[in-house]
Image (cartoon, rainbow, N blue to C red):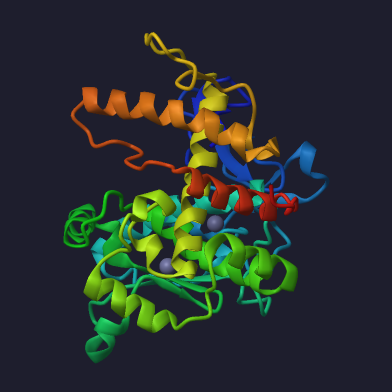
Length: 356
Ligand SMILES: [Zn+2]
Ligand SMILES: [Zn+2]
Ligand SMILES: [Zn+2]
């Protein structure tokens, strides 16, 4: 994520801020320019010199403190690019739901920021047939159907269970599923990976062929593959070829898991770049363990270069976390086979799909 500062007083800001703590100006995020704009001291509608003659106002979800993005005043929906994708939000009449939904929105907005940085199509399924939309659903009150509601993706609809925004329940699931990492942003990145598989891979015969060479043939039964996975566990020696156990269940899940990790890496490296982070460990052989965040990963064509920076960075951040008694921020080993898969994803996303 980019590092922002107040355009009025230079105070450093987070992506989610809607007011500058130092000067009191209202702040709004303009996704067309990736800027957090200092709007002024009064709540009104605003013109933004960089964005032409439109007048802008906050997205409708700002009234719940769930969004700080800007929308042209003429937009009939009143929702920003990220909130136009919401098909179902939780019942806000239930007190606890608002808190959970706001956490979901933080992760979702960060996801959309990243998809836009990659120039991926972000269109709402509510207005475009092959677009994307979100259902944020609770099992509570769903009656007999409750058990069928699951976090997942089908045909452009990403469902996120509201309980994933409850850190206690999420930790419990993480333990029950024997997982190393479980977060809201991780869910979003994984599920949206299934959507982009349909848009970027399945829709192009040549790319689909290349996909099968890298990830394997996805045509054998998905349902059976998952049944086998839950019955027998992951493939033996999964670490050599997959980023996670679950990735070894079926090529679709391998793609979604690897895609999520690809997005994890880009976001982390972008943050490191904006902070000017360098890692130069006190090791006698630091050749592969030092890094300097000298480039924005979203502008870098070589994925090898990106991953060579990510590995020492994760090693350093994991070590800092251990100093604080917190779990590793990135508890995974990226094998050569996984790097090849991420290189393929990077090629598809940057439209440079020649395999090497
Ligand atoms: Zn300020
Ligand atoms: Zn919004
Ligand atoms: Zn999946």
